[in-house]
Length: 293
Image (cartoon, rainbow, N blue to C red; front, side, top):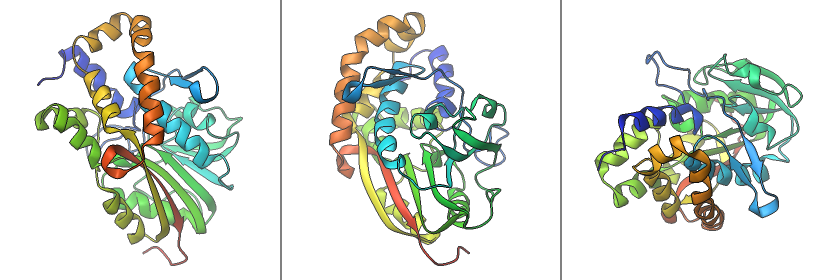
């Protein structure tokens, strides 16, 4: 099965930054790892019915789930705290009132950050050492960025260097479950093409992510799954006709037609946490006391 229309594919290419943090492998000539696109971001509704609306409908589903989870995980993180792959800062500003450092791979997007929230922002290649003294941060968080970074080991080591022993690292990433969800409903060719367009490189199991984190000095690694298999398949279906061209031409109509599905998938994606039933993982890890090599 093919993705819908060349224009739709071109639109999806923007999701590499707009949905999930963006960034290109070394030597590609594209944005540095961690780059995000600037998008309008609105909170609709209140309490448990609140949704984030940004970009296309399918982006709103994924981001709403992450917003709910990251808000809970990051709200009380001790300072100094850094947001890696902060983009325009709109998402981070919905998680915390104050963030000491925002780092992103795209210098052009950083001026959009609200400096009443972010104390300082800087364009940084996350594969390189962060421009901070070793052990100077109490916590770091990053939403859907590290799946785009190649090689990711250097970026994880950079985080470990910047964190003090006992510091917390909160990260959300899609997993190999996303590949299985796309393949089982469509085809392997479809799954490979969509993940390539989205800029996904590190689609691993929970065990693989834990191994990578422990290798650079993290301990106490805790994980919970999110974004159900059904939600991921719904996301993929919106890349196909008639939805993609419909949403481009009639975004309000598409939103109204989709909002019931979005609410259902958000609810399920926050309730179901088993690795086999989900396609992404939220990781909370603690920096150990040993030096990072």
